[in-house]
Length: 218
Ligand code: AMP
Image (cartoon, rainbow, N blue to C red; front, top):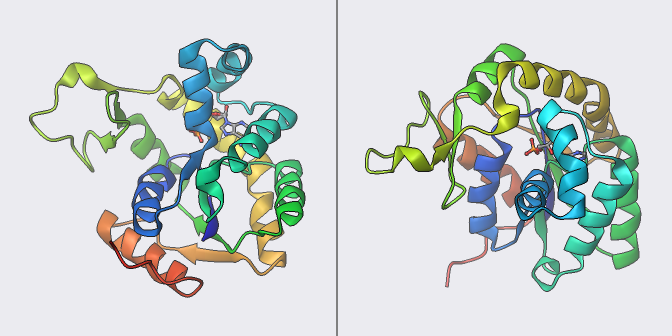
């Protein structure tokens, strides 16, 4: 299964990706997570990306495309992958299409998560990441278990209201055109993105099952 999760920041792509990759045994390739790992490790890429990320702006296409190209060459991606946060611009989408065509392994489906802006702002500003595991919680909608150490829960620097509003603007301007891009290729499918999390997962897995059944668990 080779899929793309498309939707604004805070649409729940990361949370749903975690469930989908578990069901299909494929890697979760989140360009945001990869960039944050580079920032943390202080790599030249991380240093270049940090300012843009903190402001909610996009990292240049060529940087992101090279990073994803290398990642898709890794062994664990041969049987599929779940892309989360990539592509985010039309040039990224065409670069992806070209590099997957070279591998003879095109995208199966692009799942679109649609959520209203007001809902997004409240979701994102309440979002907390559990540092040791990377698990994502929300102070109201998905509170962390009581036994988690609060000091391990962190708000991302770009999850403040001011930055979220810019990220949404960037999404509408640069990423939303991808809906048409994938629709024209017959790859776009809508999934319910609001409501109970388990129901959202069930809905996403149902759509994916039309392309490839969930593998039997060993
Ligand atoms: P995310 O975790 O997907 O919300 O990404 C966090 C930030 O990383 C974004 O606001 C961008 O600054 C940067 N980023 C992640 N993925 C991409 C991408 N595909 N293209 C450009 N910038 C990206």
